[in-house]
Image (tube, rainbow, N blue to C red; front, side):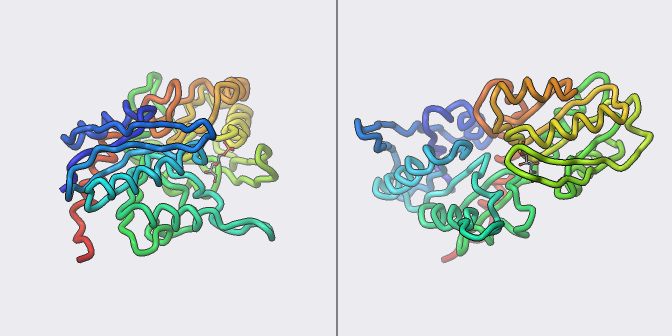
Length: 301
Ligand code: R5P
């Protein structure tokens, strides 16, 4: 049985929502940064407890080291088991060595977190070429919760209602289809070619359903916004009357949100898996449900 949810102060609000969905206390991790920039977290754990740390891993490089240190501190302070809930899991997109000389970042992150945590839960990880999250965390229990229910619930509240769901690339087909199914509308998926960090080419097949429609453009991640902007322009050119972009992980900044508006996107809705203004769709209930499922799995002896 998990005894408490531990979180760094910047994640306290999201962790609090998750902890109360599970009926667990929230314990804040103390933070200290030495003058040389090294960090030293301080934790409170009871002997033998199963500690759960919630930390989003957007802008990950500054968050990973304190997280690993906190996991170590929890064990040294008595936790028999330390688990991680990462509403956003970083470094999943570099899941191949795309060009000679590059690292396999997904594997590095997996090894690093596997060394610190017993179980890992995340939400809609970018597993487009990795069939199972367990492959990322060798020897550990891991679960990747889907976010279709969160996006569909957020989109179903919009007025005027959504007429059509659009995915920006072939990789989005399965879960754009799931969101469409939940909303009871059709789905249209574009073909996308990426040419660089910010440059993508994207085409939708001709579909008369786009003309005059309120289109929900769904994706897992908005980072530079290049994908959504290209999709927005293409849908606008095809006659969409209104475009709402619904994204699970909003890694973007305010300037990106303005560029999306200029590309014809009327509204951007995102979950609170990443910290920042305007991230409103709550992930706590979905993560709590998934956590109960992971927690019920028989563990290793
Ligand atoms: C790609 O496979 C992902 O699903 C997203 O479409 C991509 O990460 C979005 O990135 P950006 O906003 O930089 O185009």
